Image 1: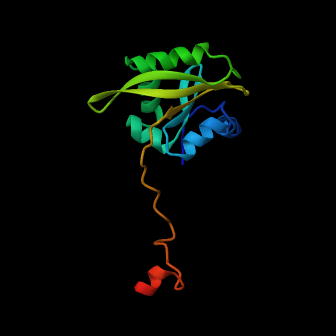
Image 2: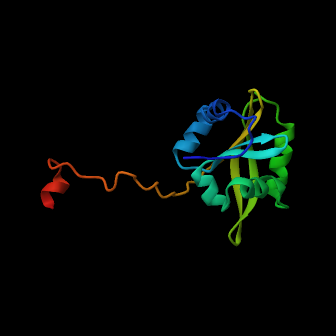
Length: 153
């Protein structure tokens, strides 16, 4: 379900705590693009599959796209990573990114969470990205014989 970066100083527990924030957890559960980043230096340490699909990048390319590009949204995210205080209430921001051939304005919930390393957590509101479910290792799902679908077969 996630793409984690290479930042070794960030623990899985810190990332999970950031994602457990109620508003972020709700966005994540509903298929919204969500990512977690360290701020010094900027590094995406978690990206939901929806974030990777929406922004068309993963790993270092996603970090570059979200924090280093010349787009207005990237410049603002870099600024937020340095000015938001850890533990302060969430903040709504309008961020503009080029998606395909269009410029999209996203309303994002942004928050820096406290921890060993303060993390910037961002979730896009009002955006839902369909992501193909991972292939099942055990093969196809079998329908129990007592179900109506099995009776029709």
